[in-house]
Image 1 (tube, rainbow, N blue to C red):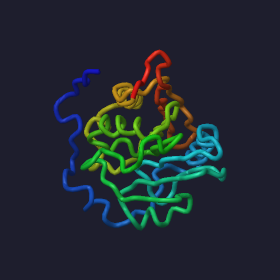
Image 2 (cartoon, rainbow, N blue to C red; image 1 turned 90 degrees about the vertical axis):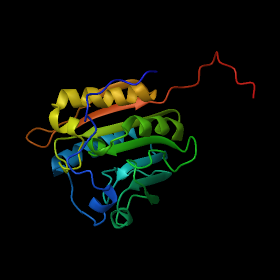
Image 3 (cartoon, rainbow, N blue to C red; image 1 turned 120 degrees about the horizontal axis):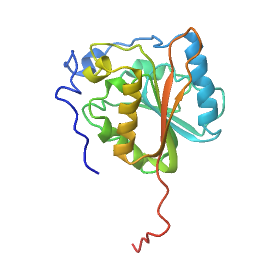
Image 4 (cartoon, one colour; image 1 turned 180 degrees about the vertical axis):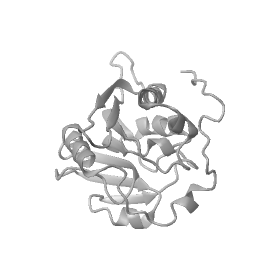
Length: 214
């Protein structure tokens, strides 16, 4: 599948210093308000099957997950102290996806993956999502939640320039180019609160007509 052509400087940021410096100190902040956090948790309750293995990509000190029991909740983030403070994680790793987009997990390790209000910081998103296909089981799904708050100097210039509809289209393009199918959008924004836009996609099931003789 050919790469889409993005405008010059599309993935550049105002602050191009190493992310490890920016995220070196913990920031125990929530990037959406309480009503929107509740809406995201409600969505996760529908999206994440009880007992499933969940990958919390670009994780922090809070995952917004419901109280359901999961077999595994793996957090990948940028600050060790934030990850250590997250009570929902069963394991965690500090990993800079903008330096190395390959995910440090085995093949088919998870049934679900989530990214909460952080997609705007990825400068190599399609590489990340192509590898996410690998670590999800066939039929596994990812949900990417977006709002309007961010660390502006670390968000890619495209996200700062685009409106909400075009941001949704852009994230849908990421998933499509990476090989996800059944890509869908939901607006879960509560009234009079921060917006909540969610794009989800599915790793395809194997083609039953294709034989593997190895």
